[in-house]
Amino acid sequence: MTDKKEKILQAALELFATEGYNATATSKIAKKAGVSEGLIFRHFNNKKGLLEALNNQVEDKIKIIFTPIFFETNSKEIIKKYIYLPFDFNPEEYNFWRLQFMLKWQNEYYNPDKLEPVLDKLTQAFLDLKYKEPQKEAFVLMQIIESISIIILREGIEVVLPYKKFLLEKYKV
Amino acid sequence: MTDKKEKILQAALELFATEGYNATATSKIAKKAGVSEGLIFRHFNNKKGLLEALNNQVEDKIKIIFTPIFFETNSKEIIKKYIYLPFDFNPEEYNFWRLQFMLKWQNEYYNPDKLEPVLDKLTQAFLDLKYKEPQKEAFVLMQIIESISIIILREGIEVVLPYKKFLLEKYKV
DNA sequence: TTTAATTAAGTGATTACTTACTTTTTTATT
DNA sequence: AATAAAAAAGTAAGTAATCACTTAATTAAA
Image (cartoon, rainbow over all chains, first blue to last red; front, top):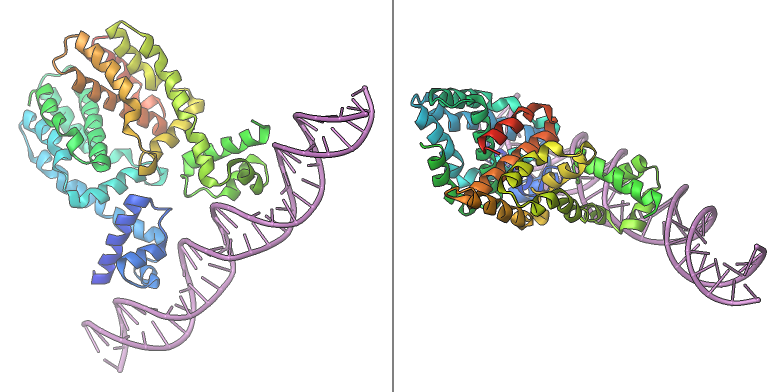
């Protein structure tokens, strides 16, 4: 990937994540990236291609984040590591995840199955820990962690920092 | 409010909630409402005015939804009624709430204080029920209910219907 | 010397919004 | 109740600005 192509992606991500996809003009992206507007279309065909290039990174990033959990065998550790997730987000990637969460509202990009393996892994853990309804426990915990992720991406981590300890104690992990 | 003004608001709400605010052209709203485009600007000054007119309804609607909870004195009933909330959403108002949740991603319209009285009421209930950290319990429950609300608005109520019973039992209400 | 990267200057289509005008409703006066 | 005047509701046909995207030429790299 050339230097300028990278710059374009970076500028697009920042603008899409803060102003929204439709509100971001390609001219603005070019200006921010310090390139001519035409270069965007040489490298990415059209505006949508830009968004898709950003979206193509999501599977890799999800994999990176969840790999330590998938390799964990101790049930309490699985839940513990999962609770840690949003608090360990790399701030440099806030924009990336912000965009992903925003896109959930555009049906075209919404795929609820993406996190099914995670649900399964958590369900196994709750089952092992003798929870009565492990699948539902897993689902609810995922909703809590998703909510906290969203708050962090929108308002920063400070507001929800106390809930790390609270959740760890609540689930006794 | 005249008949056509109402039609414009209704069309705008539907389009904003499904396609997004920026992706919706005023010409499209006029077409859907069956009025001339100019009438939109006569009644609402500009496109943003349309959005603000819709947003002005939110305080009233929040009040309507939460009033039964605020008048409840029995702590278990408070939590019970709160858990019921998303499952009792009026489908005719799905678009309205969908738009509200979408707008949360645009900083301009995001106000986290709006639900503080609800947090207080739930905190009181958890305190009364001898929970160790009532304020945090209230916060987490609110996140769960918000997540479930979002799923209902995006995918329909069927997917999360089993969690009604599950949550009621989890909180013993 | 061929290929790829890059740009400046366009393009037609669409955008939010305006203007000038007509129609309908409300108000005031006989 | 009838009528005239004023105000509000509504429309058709614009407008300039901006949009995503293209073209033709230039520069740099392989």
